Image 1 (cartoon, protein in one colour):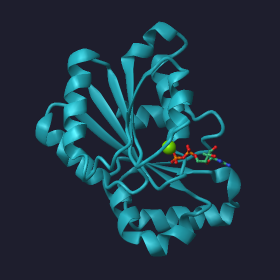
Image 2 (cartoon, helix red, strand yellow; image 1 turned 180 degrees about the vertical axis):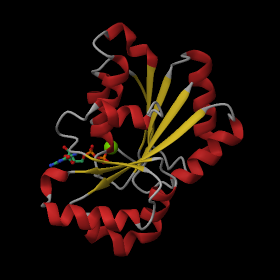
Image 3 (cartoon, rainbow, N blue to C red; image 1 turned 90 degrees about the horizontal axis):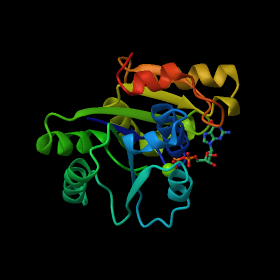
Image 4 (cartoon, rainbow, N blue to C red; image 1 turned 135 degrees about the vertical axis):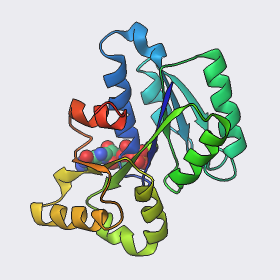
Length: 200
Ligand SMILES: Nc1nc2c(ncn2[C@@H]2O[C@H](COP(=O)(O)OP(=O)(O)O)[C@@H](O)[C@H]2O)c(=O)[nH]1
Ligand SMILES: [Mg+2]
């Protein structure tokens, strides 16, 4: 069993990517939707996102009373054990809060479930990157640090020069990850999902 954790700042495009990733894994056969469980962690949220996600037929579990990287780490572990026992999906997709430290989430998970294949993707917002960097540097650095895949999203909103600057800036924090420039409003190439799943 595999878990893909999506980190990245609020509004960077995580939910938009989750929807497409779930579709990619399930394919055209709605009966296969049970292969995927989605965990949405938001703080104090009244979410419309989970309705959109559930429309795909996937099991969606919400954790809204805090952040799983810190105050809710116990709930996360318990929730994962229950999912594995009751649903046994092929893939768990977890969208973290915008302020989560994915590094902590991975450590928490692996301490309790050492055999789980745990992968981290960080979604970044090309348009807001430069503005967010200064006030949020510690958080963004950690979100990038722990990622095997970094998605530079919203490329439709920036010019080529800005995009090059953003990518160079991001690579100063992590140049080992696999990078993809995407717009999550359009169809995301299969190669991106393969990388997120560790298949390529
Ligand atoms: N223009 C543009 N908008 C995007 C893109 N990806 C996401 N959005 C929009 O950005 C907003 C936040 O996206 P969402 O997926 O909810 O981000 P999350 O908070 O990280 O889950 C939504 O209004 C999306 O429609 C993109 O590539 N281009
Ligand atoms: Mg979201």
